[in-house]
Length: 469
Image (tube, rainbow, N blue to C red; front, side, top):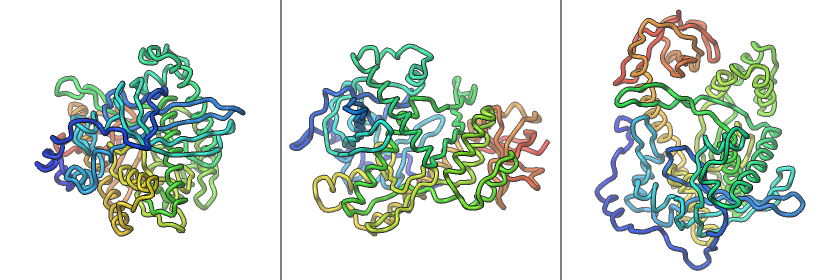
C-alpha cells in the first residue's frame, strides 16, 4: 500500500477525533421515522460494514414500491476532518486475502455508521415506484431513521430464492420478511430484464477468494453471482441512476461513474467471429449483449472465460465530473447515461461525496465542494482506485503463488487475459489464478486459449510465471 501511495494506518489526529465519537447520529427535525418497515441487509457472509438496506411494498395496478436506505456516513464523518482526510486520500477500502484496510475506522464503518442488525441508524432513503413492466413511475429521496431487522448473506438467500433450500433462520424469525424478499426478487428480475433489453451486459466473471488453513492457502474459492447478489445489484443500479438524475434535475454538478465505449471493439468483433457470430463494426451494447446471451446458452461452461475476455477489452471504469447542461458521459456496460456511485459510503469516497451533494440538494444548502474540487476529486478517486486494485491484485497473486509454489513444472489449461507491449498474461482455469507468460507469447491476444507450464513463483512479490507448453 505504501509503495502505491496509500495510507494503511490512521493518523493520531484521526484517532483523536474517533475517540470523541461515542454514539450513532441521532434523528433531527424533518427526518422520517421508518424503523417499523421490514428493512433487511444482504451482503457477503463476512461483511460487517453494512451500507444499504432494502424493503418493498406492493401497490395498486401491479406497481411495487422499492425503498433503498443508504447509511448516512456524513452525519458522523464531517468534511474537512482528519478522518475525512484519510478517506479522501485512500478513497476506498482495500480488501486483501489476509486483512482489510478500511477507508474509515472500523469503529465507524462496522458499528456507528453501519446499518447493523437491530440498531437505529440514520440513512438517506431512495424511494422508487416501479410499474409491472419494470419502468420507473416515480421517485423520491429523503433522510430517515431506519432499523435493520435481519442481517442476511448472499449465499444462503440466493440458494433459498432459487428454490434450492429453506429460508435462512434470520428470515424465519421476522414475520412477513420472506414474502417481502420474494417481492423484491420479482422486481429485481424484471429490472434486470429491462436493462438487458437496453443493452446492459450480462457478464459473469470469477472472483476467487483465498481460503486459509493456518498460514497456508488451502484453495482459491470462486465467488459466483446468484439471485440475491442480482437483487442487490439491480436495486443499487436503480438507486445510482435516480440519484444522478436527481442531481442533474437540480442543476447541480456530480461525479459520475463512467465506462467508455471499448477502444478494442475490433478484438471483441474478432472473438465473436471466431465463435461463428457477427457484431457490428462500431461499439453497440445491445448487439454485444445479444451475443453474450446467445453464448451463455450455447456454451455455459466457457461463458466465464468469454466474459473475462470481454471485460478486459472493454477496459476499466473511471470517475468523471458532470456539469449541469452537459452531455452525461454514460456507462457502456450498464447501458445507462446517468449513473453515479452513491450506495457504499462506508467503503468508497465517491459515494460519500455524492451523499454530501445529495444532502445539500435536499436541504437547499450551499454545495460542499466547488467545481474545481470535484474535478480534482474525480481524478484522484480514479487514480486511487487503480492503486487499490493493484494492491489487491498483487496480494491475490501472492496468495495464489503460495498455493502453487509446490507445483513448478506442472501444466495447466489457460486463457489470455492481457496482451500488450508490457507483456502477456494468462489465467488458469483451475485453480483460477493469473500470471505472466514469460515464453511463447508471440501471436497471442486476449481470449486465446492455450496450454501453459508453471516455471516460477515468488510469493513475496506476487509473481507467477508460465511458459507456453
